[in-house]
Amino acid sequence: MTSINELIDAIIQVLLEEKAYDIPTVCTRYGLENGNESEAFQSRRVYVQRRLKGKDQLFLLDLAKRIIDDYGSKANSLSKFVLLLNPTELYTITEITRRNIMDELLARNNITGKYNLVDFLNRVWDLDSMPSTDSRFKTASGDIWQHMINNSDWDEVYLYEKYLELMIAPDEVFIKFLEQVVHPLVRQQKEQDEYIEFINKHLVYDGYKFVLTDNISGFPVYHIDKMLDGVQGNVKNLIFAAVGQKPEIVISDLINNDIRIVKHEENCLVYDHNISNTGLYWADLVMWWAKMNGAAEPNIEMEKQLYVRLLQTLASPPEKLLFMNYFKCFKKLFDKNFPALIPQVYLHYDPYTLRQRAGKPYLSRQRMDFLLLFSNKQRIVLEVDGKQHYSDDDVSSPKKYAEMMQADRELKLCGYEVYRFGGYELMDEEAGAKIVKEFFEGLFKKHGIKPS
Image (cartoon, rainbow, N blue to C red; front, top):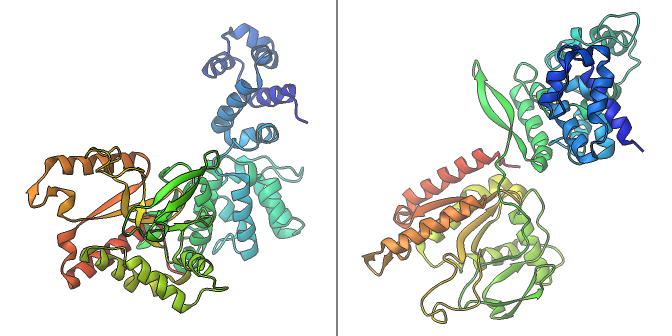
């Protein structure tokens, strides 16, 4: 097992890259005790070692991560030690994600696209500044040419994972590598789209994705960006499609946050299957509905029943127009990747009625008109505003409007995206259908949601 002393030695080895006269400044920058140049000139190693002895593991791990960020590939040996001591926190793009992406790239057998190997690698690494491991050559370019092209005694796994150490490289290097894999100079647009799609499926688990940022002569250029953090935690209780009297809910297991509906259960639906990190699809909902109704497999009839059941929960024509046109425009196009549009979802739950609360609600918005789960974290709320949202009967109510805006702010601060439709803009069937179609096209594009 890697010891603290070995970690200290690995840190020292990186800092020995510095000149003796710079060592005191470098140590001070990392929060270590100050010294003088004469001590550093006597022995750089001893100078650093004295300042690391007695530090606890947490301090050393934090210091190591900062050094790895600053020194990049020069700190690869230190990276290995940190991975052994603390494998989950060194990189944002985890080893599991890197492994899954590399397995798919290697299986496709075309990482370099239109480029030859050495020219492609030079787009990521400066091979001529990297020392050779073969005495016959001066730089890494010679190594790679000899063992990958001239003799072919290395395979791609060895090249990328052992020689270039891509699996333990800093996030910035791994990201740069992926960005070059999908660059328009490297591969054509159709293949570019395919690569971006499968890489995004893995990156999303670590909160990253490819986004369109530029173009070269009309050809799209993509970069990897950190996604919005979204909503923290996982979906646990999805209670939706509420009609009639409010269901009465009790917590049957407080520790596990398990609930049970004890009255008016027939007035709502409770999705009790696990929701994957990639979100909730219509196909998942249909599968659950079929099982709940005793069918071994879902079928068209079951799907129609669920659609009708959800449609029945929508009270206003604008809500129905949005729901029906969503299915009409996108169901066939997305097929199995069609995100479920879930109506009348409980966000908060107050066991008492407004009357029992003497007209003073504790929770301003108990239900959302619609919810989309693009992932466990990326949750989209859609609200269709009728006059009840901002007036009492036909009298404008600034108080109601303010409460609605406050509820929106709270949702957004929790990581939800909130979009509002005015009921009036969805009253006309033809104009409303166009609005719905254009909105969802924009929403899907923003989140990188693509048809099957």
